[in-house]
Image 1 (cartoon, helix red, strand yellow):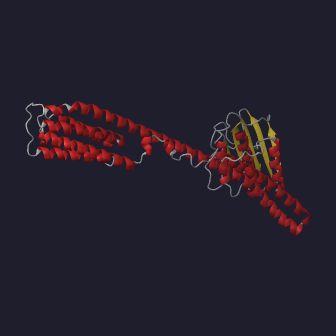
Image 2 (cartoon, rainbow, N blue to C red; image 1 turned 180 degrees about the horizontal axis):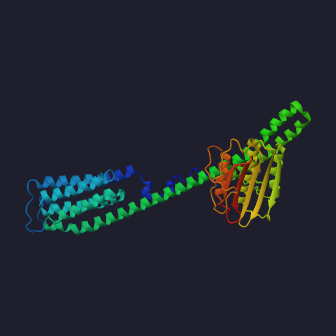
Image 3 (tube, rainbow, N blue to C red; image 1 turned 45 degrees about the vertical axis):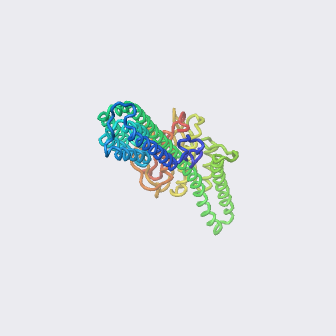
Length: 435
């Protein structure tokens, strides 16, 4: 799996719709320009209506002394609401409704009211859309302001009341579209957040897997190297003829650990886009892999007895690698901590699972935690049936348990009453690869 920190990055601007490529400051400028033009045009029409208040000879009364100032003030207020609809959507809707109420109450002249009413409808449509698209609270304010404006219109002169149907239809449609846009954005944001969380979880899981692999490779190799280096120092002082064997063992173990580390890093380089590397086979529970572990441990001065029961069969690569790492870690702990003279490795192929048991005859795992509380499958427990919680420390043993549990298995580890330390694990032998 490729660890890609840019997987949750923002999409390229070229892939965005043109409405999202335009910056917010430019949209504010467009609103201000539209408000200025609309206010100027509507104001000029209101002035014309004040002079020609009865163009069709219907007996319309002349405007009162305050009608023209009130109408012009309302027109300017409506323009300001349009200009500020993006900065304060709810406030813009409230201001527009209030301006329209003041206009209806203070200007009873039909011709002027008709012109200003049409401007109020034009302002109300984008204001309702923006408020509904902004958030739920602003959308409710917009709906309430629109309803208030419709009610006020019913108290206006007859010619002005003709705008109420247009206002209801246009502003309701704008509000519905804005609310749908808000819901879509919320759904998209939630989906993006969920996708980003999955990506982070995948990266964290991959890092954890790599950390376990590096720990298992390095810890086992360094454990054997440390023992052999101590023996080599002793041999140089007391048995010079045996120092060469210790150095040869150090060279073999370090070369093997270096090969596995390089193979792991080659996978990372391949994920990063470089040319595929020629990788060594993934280790498992084959006789050759177990023999290689046994030879390393014997080179560290500890006798190893490997026993395989049942019909050996091919395991899924992930299960085989996990089983191999469990045996490797158990042997490394025996070499580093137990002071044992020998260790027994038992592998048993059962129906649907493979059973592992690594037992040493040392000091009972001094310095290692008791992991007898196994995680994972309920299909069987350790032979001693103990159950408890892991004590602190023991990164390798905890890693074994987590690795086995990730494939639906379980792992226990703890000292024996008669002395020594035992690690027991069971993994499903089929259908668990890639868990």
